[in-house]
Length: 251
Picture (cartoon, one colour):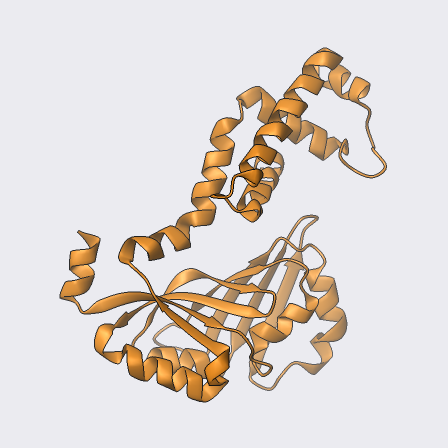
């Protein structure tokens, strides 16, 4: 049904990857990242500025960017704010100008969040009118260079899979763990059992959880084995599974 609807409106799903853009703000942020960044872009119809909301599982991102960038923000950055927790960072930017976003608006392209910044590559999933794709791609190559822009046509179901892959993989991983395994793993992580050096022993964990030492060890081993099996599965990427560890242990 979704395929028919897109065809009726003349839309096709594509993925655009920008490989090298030294003048792009998001790409420049890559110097301060040790993990991928996921971001969304908004523009209210009453505003001229773009709002970028970003998340990264890199807890040191804010300290790095505040130390190196804060005092010399580009002129087109209206404001920026970054906040970190022990396991992640959140970044908000209000930007006055952006060639890429202006091009997206010009061609009435619909961005499908989340967008990704990973190892200097910007990855966007989007919908565009079929008769405007060629000119859109040509415009991007003129701005960023032919070798720096990769446009891939996708089937409708493929674009849905790519956008929601991380969520689906995280859910798959969580479903394999029992409630007791999650509870034990969460408590062990919060208590510092996986820290180096360890902040709590297995014996102490068993006392605080009210379980035998052997039972706690069994829950931990089974939980970690299931997570590692999911990571080793070639159909599932490691990042969402590791993110699932964070969600189940800190929420």
